[in-house]
Structures are given as C-alpha cells and as structure tokens.
Amino acid sequence: MSSQSKVVIGIDGGGTHTRVIVVNTEGNVISYVEKGASSIKKDLNAIDNVHQAIEEALTQASCDVINVQGLTAGIAGLDSDEDYKWAEKLTQIEGLNCSKWIVNDAVIAQSGAFLMKPGIVVISGTGSIIFAINEMGKSIRNYDFYHYASSAARFLSYEAMFEILAGNTNESDQILIGNVLSYWNVKNIDQLRTLGMQGFIKDKRERDRFFGKMGPLITEASNHGSNLASSVCNRAIHQLVVGIEILGSCFSSDVIPVAYIGSVLNSPYMKSTLTELLQQRKRKTYMVQEPALSSVCGAALMALTNLGIPINEETIINLQEHKTC
Image (cartoon, rainbow, N blue to C red; front, side):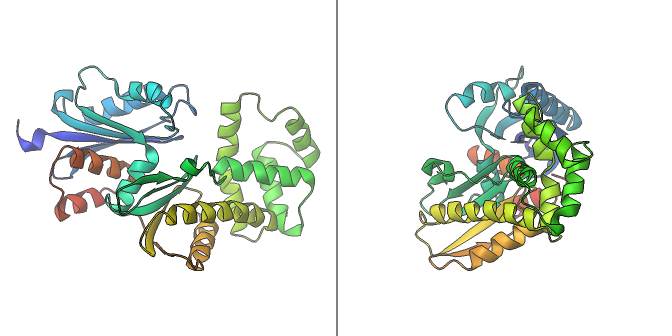
C-alpha cells in the first residue's frame, strides 16, 4: 500500500452537526462531509448521521475502508463510562477495523486549538465545557470540579425568556422582545406566557433544540444595547471566568493560552467581554488566541499522532488550508 493510499478519519461530533474529514499521512484533506448531530442526547438519529457521514466521506475520497489506518472521534455529551456504550456504535461500520479513539469533543477542540500542546479551550455553542491540558499533560475539565458554566445557547435563551415573562425589561429590550415573539410565532407576551404555562414544547430534546436555535437572538441583542440580553450574557461570562480560573490554577505557568470554540463564544459581545475580563485577572495571565486548527482537523491530528506518523510544519499547513470545517 502506498503512503498516498493510507488515510485517517477525523470526526467532530457535535450536538448540532457531525463533521467528518478524510486525511492522508501528509495532512492533506481529501474529503469533508457534514451531517446532523452525533450526540444521541440531542438526536435519536445520531448513529445513522455519523455512519452516513463516514461512508460519504470515504466515497468522496475514493477510499476503501481497508485503507483507513486510524480514526479519532470527538463526541459531544461523552461524559461518563455509560456514554461510551452508545458512542462506540457511532463508528461501527462493516470493514472499518482500524484503530479508533473515541473522546469528548472538547479533547479534539483542544488538540486543534493548541496543536496538542498545553492550553485551555472554552466551548460554548450547543453545549458548554471548559477543558485544559496542563504542562504535565494532565487533562482537566471544569466538570471534574462539579462546575458548570450555563453558557450554551439554550441556557442564554431560557434565561432571557424567564426575564421577559417576569417583566424585567425596559425600552432597550423592545427589539429583542419583538424578535422573541416572532420566533415563537405569538403576538404578545400574554400569548408567550400561555405557551410557557404549557411547557413551551412537550418533548425535552425538541424543546432544548428550539431554545438553542433562539440563542443568536440573545447574543445579537447584547451587541446592540439590550440591557436584558447583556445581563444574561454577563452572568454566563462570569461563570466562564470562574471555570477558566479554576483550571488555570492547575497550571504551573503564570501565562496560559486560551482559545474559544462555538457560536456563542464567537459572537462579538461574548468574545470581547470575556477577553476583557480575562485580561483583568491578577493571579494568572490568560493569552487569548485563535485556534490553530478546527476541531475536526484536531481529531485528524490526534489520529496521525496516535499512529506514530511524524507531524511536521507541512502537515500543519496542509490541515490549516482546509477552511470549510
């Protein structure tokens, strides 16, 4: 088998999208496919979504499963031993008998952001987690301390909804309120309240998904002067700062790299406010930087590294050239 025919698969399995790439040993991305969610906690069709994404990516790459040397999948919601039972099924495809590494999606995000070097990655999108690898190679999550930052899109939406229904609004919030009413297809707050008394949406998975899709209304409103939206975002940001500092205390260095991942954290208000607050910290210096690679490319990088394939500057440049993921 020639080196050109040897490939690895990287999977970024989020709560909204599954992103799959096929990469050769030089780091060239041969194919890229995107499907629905990978987490069974978010989508009951998660296994089918991932299987279809892998099969389509291999077809695009004109690659047979026997040429796949390794696969790394970062899966959202993979937090306990019990979760591995369903997560392992995601890559169980006939003939795909390569080495496989199934990890939480924060792990591949950190791998991509810092090229497998120490640093803290902060993720807020469909889900929320703060994950670090320190100088000793120790993996640390804010979850390990039973800390959770309610900064995922759905939490911002729930909090904003509660404030609206409680009447904690002013003139600066009128555009946001109008957008929320339109989003829920109701004419006024009384109708919104009636909808709330009925539980909004009966199925929890569907309710969380719908509130999650409402998240951009909140982050955009915070950037346009809504006091309500800014207050909701600021509470989430404070929780993120606390979580980052908890993990930062586990580093021996006084200077710690930090990267942001996810639609919530990359909205202008959240990004600028969190960065400003981190710059004011006294105990450690947090150096916010853009991720070196996307999460799915981070998964491919882990697969190459785990197989003992040498990673050089050309490999990284080749991975960085793939911008669509």
